[in-house]
Image (cartoon, rainbow, N blue to C red; front, side, top):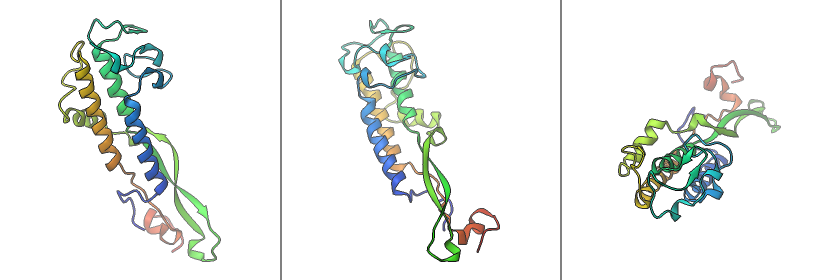
Length: 196
């Protein structure tokens, strides 16, 4: 078997990547009632902090009247929320190699190494710098997340569109380096003293 191919051989993993990124693209556009519960690594600390759906703002600036736990929601805070939320969505499921037994009577295949989907893993998250660079490449919407730098619906829409583009690209290009190993080649795959 080929070791560490940059191709997703497992249809379950492929389906997961497809489904989760599709759902994530939609989630980026949802209003506050659909944001994740609990704290978020951004100025907006919980779903209750964002009292108005982003598409309902007529003007978003440093004097926004939308309350947050720490004061008023600024345009830069809102853009940060979208950026961090979308970046977190680039995580995909960890793929591990798990040993399974088979009873087909063939000595060399008495042990089969197969992929198993486990929990979400930040190990596969796009690097922050790479993510920011790719978002900026869609029209430089992150030229400076300073207070008031994104102060209109149009600017927020530009940011969301850029995030969507990166997520869409990640959806079609993301892959996990996977090794599927048969016991007959276990020695060559992993350097162990497995059965040949």
